[in-house]
Image (tube, rainbow over all chains, first blue to last red; front, side, top):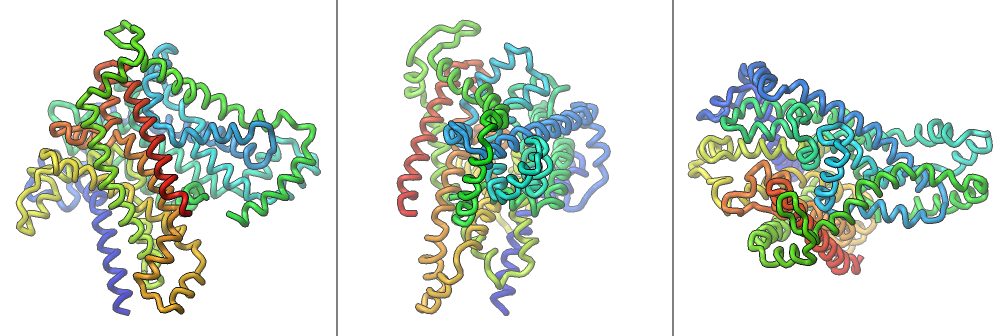
Length: 270
Length: 303
């Protein structure tokens, strides 16, 4: 009884500490820069949220930036989802020459530092005249090794009778994929979708290099650029950060069951 | 996993018999992934090595052989960056993984209430973008008027020079990393704990093993493969560390939080020295490869 209370209250306290930055983000987003750094610092929400958002709009064209982020992340999620699911399907359900080699090659991407490719990718985009374009951001990471791995894992758990029954019934390959293979792995697809969206929504280094003008910026770039400005307005920066983080947090809370189980399907393999 | 394999094995046999006429199909399914990977990953990796053999002078590229690598070995800033990264690897990563193991054991305890809520709370930092949480920590840890120093002040502790002192800047970076990744690792450990056979614990209890002995002789060996996995993943992530120091400290003060990833970025995209940046990238890839192999050798052989 007392050990139960001690354990639970210790962990609740620890969670509270972990969640303080989130709480304070929301609070600070509603204050002016002067208030954020006032003494004592603000502990309750204030009345400056709309001012901060208006300042962001005037300073970096925030609505355009949010639009860029939404468009890029959505496009990326759909296309990368398709590429990874297709590859995962072949690796999970077919036997073909070179299968082990190709899968091993793709998984190499998990251990190769992404920095190795930054300079050549930049030169490639420069040569193609693709800097500041959506395709420059979306295309390079479509074949995401983790996504392919996750899809192969979840599809190899499908019963073989399901596939052979579909084929006996004269189901074409595309219909088999869409009608027989995808529906039962819907939880894994949800996990993949959230993961891909989060990954692209938060991605920083590559967009920082490939997007050179402000009207092409995504949210992380815009808020990082604000920090470099001569007079840094932290009220605005934190309002932008909250706009970037809170929708993701809500999405995550709604779908966390899928997300956590999907991540674990990828992580816990031996 | 074994259950999965035994289910997959007969499945393969049926499929092979049923699919003699569809030899092209699998290649069509993997084509987009393989083609994109070849164009945007493999080709740049090879190109990067080629670039590392050239010296960049403005727009001029001259073949220089191993000159960039020679420069690298003699570059004190590179060694500083490598040492900073190494410190995080040796101090922050083990501490974080130890906390994550303890957290996973606590989350797995039948005594714990509100388990779902607590697990979620620890996992939530993971979804925050690196730039977002870097900025947030920069404001929270502001030496003059940040929330953290204000709270410490309430307890009578003088303001800590987070971000402006070489030692404290490193600690701040470590705290931010720990906040972000501990819950994620704990959830991975937790799922492994839940898969450990219960009779092992029962047998240990029958043999009279106390809590600490059960942890030491049942939990830790059971977790070993996952500890190896998280250790390798954290190593790869740490060696590539870029976003957090870029946002939080920009490598300062006095290069105390300069990481290899940040140094590579500065050379490539601030000084536009692509050849040298590529050499740094390759040095990084080699270091990651060596550390990965060492970790698998040392920890892997006992699993």
